[in-house]
Image (cartoon, rainbow, N blue to C red; front, side):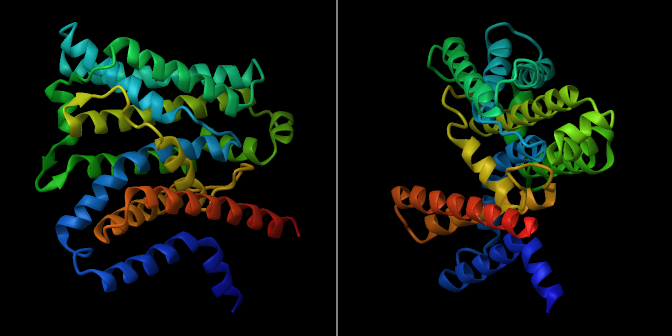
Amino acid sequence: MDKVKQFASRNGALIGLVILCIVLACCTPAFLTGANLLNVGIQTATVAILAFGQTFVIVEAGIDLSVGAVAAVSSMFAAYTGASMGWPGWFTIIVALLTGAVFGALSGLANAYLKLPSFIATLAMMSVARGLTLVISDGRPIPTSSAVNFFGSTVMGIPVPILTMLLMGVIAAVILNFTTIGRSMYAVGGNMEASRLSGISVHKTQIMVFVLSGIFAAVAGLVIAGRLHSAQPQAASGYEMDAIASVVIGGASLSGGKGKISGTFVGAILLAVIRNGLNILNVSSFWQQVVIGLVIAFAVSLDTMRRKIDTH
């Protein structure tokens, strides 16, 4: 019985996802069709990639509110350097990744050396990134190169956004579980002072998690731009909340030191399935926002309860 409770506690999101899929399959036959499942995968891709990067930050006991805006500004720089400056398509992708890394580094530096709470540092960076996106584009979409458009295409019948999501998930899992910086994230998130005394470079870890989050956000921005064949000024608006929710639903703790990529992946799928199911059932988009908000509140409540249980 204890093993069952332990499994349910560690895999609540997965159990919830299975139950939700069964309910939706019973409510409408359209849910389990191949076309709809691929649609769910595509809907999951962008949020999941953002959430993978967000996992690093939350494990380190931070939060990154800038990921949606960084995704938008990264794709906008890629589009601008290609359309207006004539740079090669492959190089515009590098520009996007570097843009994400720079914005992440700035957030990390503000958090590590200026001692700004990650909430404030990334809130400021969100405003800067979104403003630059509007300045560069003058509020209008900019067409993207064929190299960027590849991120929205299909390979052998499989959408590239899904392939990109899976690749970024594997990369994130390797970083978190098999590298020194990954172990440092858990250590710093669990106890910053103890980590400092044990010789871990806390500042380096704080900066690195935001750099990684920025790079993952840039990849998400490329996926969005690739699907639309253009960089949109308001792309990924509000996606940061879905990314944070995915991480928390997946079992990570907002107090740091706990989280895994597989859980984040399940959390992102769960949010996508909820939205997809509500669309199929013709639920108003207004009510969808209410439902997603309640899910986020429930996820944070679960995190609070888990922490209370762990302390007793």
